[in-house]
Image (cartoon, rainbow, N blue to C red; front, side):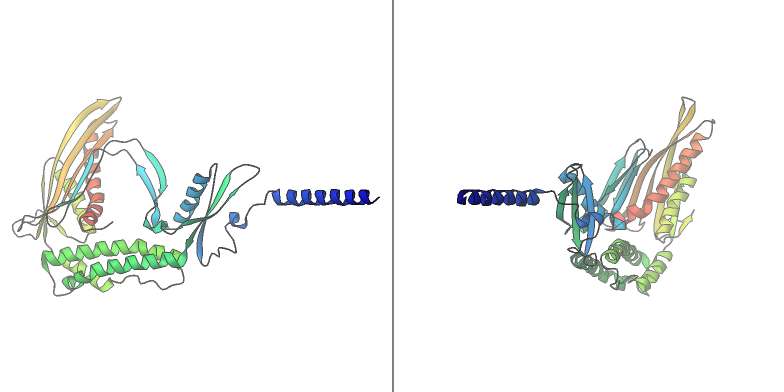
Length: 349
């Protein structure tokens, strides 16, 4: 009888142990953070990103991408459209080449990519989970708001430090090319501050943001640029129309261009040289190609401030229309290219 009692007790102990082990081995349910909320990572202190994929690495990358998408200025849509043989060269004020790029004919595609740049420094994968039913992985990425805000403010202070020597150069009675150059550099600094301020509003929405810091200096900068006399010289077939596009781009910088102005008395000279080519018919379409070079230089010192080389194609089912379309496409390219190329030579993004 005693042996039977001991045997029953042992059996009960084994059964209890088995039940306990089974309870521990039971798969856990979905974590709270899968819905974007988790008390361990309060959204007041952290930005959260959740990613899901068939493997752990892809889920982690998707989670980081979700955080990147919180920063409007960091999501880049790259569109490669039918664009012909575009070459841009931006020269610094000392004549050195600062940037050069080329793009050949490409088929149209639209790929949205998330820029994993310095703003994503500090993003950590805090947790992962695998769905026991689907076997898919989920990952939680977190970014400490305070740390991100500190990094952004440091970058803003560095930009402000680079702008400090420019401020006296643009304030009245500053004038001339040096004042205008400083004004353009100040415009580039302000352009670089804008995305940082936008990101700061994301990580610290209730914190004060120092926007429009250089509003007064910007007015003086615009005045310095507006006082410059810029003569436009155009040569080649279609050059007048293409020159108009180049002048439109320069006006985006605040420069006032006078077509037909006297280069001998101008502060700056904008020159456009073009050529066009009839490519003939092909598969029921008439094709033409227009190419050109646009430059901006200081006539007194000979310094080349900017040089753009562009080519564009035009097509039409009607004879005689392809050439003017190619010329207009070339003019549009110059108009769009000038502000970005100018920011490159001035150290902008």
